[in-house]
Image 1 (spheres, rainbow, N blue to C red):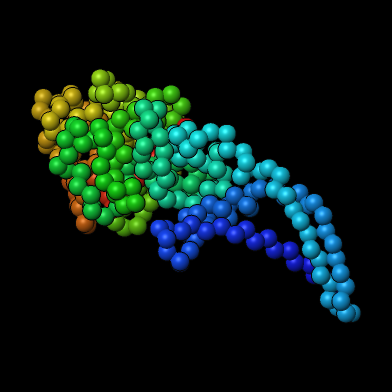
Image 2: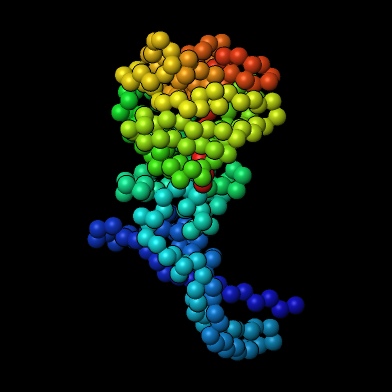
Length: 295
C-alpha cells in the first residue's frame, strides 16, 4: 500500500521591535490556521520521480482559490454582535471567549461570546459566578455604560443592551445554577430594552423553560430600569435602594439577577434570585447567573 502525504507550510511571523526572536503570536497562529482550513485550494501542477523500489517523491503546487479567507466582505467594524461574528467567521464555532464587537454608535466593546450553546452566537450581557465584581455600589451611569471584566463577571451596559435589541429580533437565554449543583435555563423569544430617554424600559415575553424552570421575569415586563439614584419602579419606596442593585424592578421583584452575591445558599430576597423554580420556589440565593442574547 502506498501512502501519499501532502503538507503545506505557510511561513508567517509577527515580530515586535527589532528583536531577533521572531515568534508567531498564538492569536495570529489560530487565525491563520482557521483561514487556511476553510480556504479552497486548486491544484496547479504535479511532478513525480521514482528513486529506488519504494521511494516515490511527489511535488505539487497549489493555488489558494477563494474560500472564507477571501470572503470577508465587511471591515471588522461591521461585527456588531457575537452572532454577527459567527455568521461571518463560522470557524469560530465552539470557541467561547472574549471578542470585540462594534455598536451602531461606533463604540468598540469587548464582550464574552458563547459560541457553543444551542448553536452558538450568543452575546453575554450579564455574567456572575463568584461575586468578584461589585454590582451593589453602582449608579445609573455605571449600569448604562457597563462594568466588570468580560473574562470574569460583568454587566455589558444598558446602552449596549438597547443597541443589541432595538431591532426587536433578539432572543434572551438565562442560565442559572444553585449551590446544590442543580442547573436550569429559560429562554424568551422576545427581549428588547429601550434607550436612555425611555429609561431602558423592558419588553420581554415568549417564555420557555427547561424541566422545573418557571417564569420569573415576565412580571417585570414594561418596567423601566431602576437604580438607587434613579427610582422608576412602582413601589412607594426605591426597590434598588432596598435591594442594593439596579434592575427592572416593579413592586419589587420575582427575579433579581443583579442582587447581592452570597458565597453560600441563603434564603433572602436581597440575593441573586429566581423565585419560581419548581424544585423549591422562593427567594433563594443562586451560585451563578448568565444572561445572553442572540438575534
